[in-house]
Image (cartoon, rainbow, N blue to C red; front, top):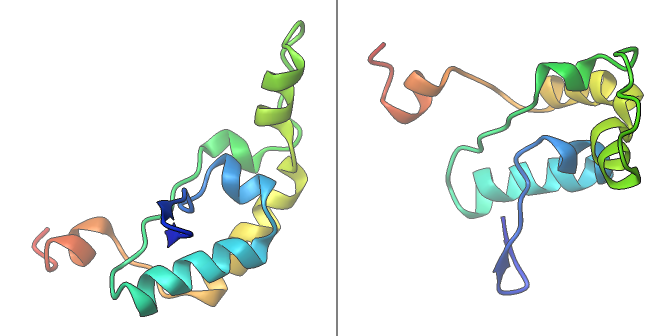
Length: 98
């Protein structure tokens, strides 16, 4: 999303776990309504598993980046799915020619 003369990542992953949900929601609304474009959102399957095994010996930066807010990801995803209309990439970007 464009803000303060710069492009900021707002499509999911670690940013979705790190930042408050309201920022993700605002960003998607901004892309949809102000930019007039569909938003693309991504996540990694492991981000939905807060009980995943921890990697021994991982550094502080890696632990922060990988494990932060894992317990919040699924509830946030459920809220995101309820707050917006979603569809397949082919229908959104290619006009539905699957």
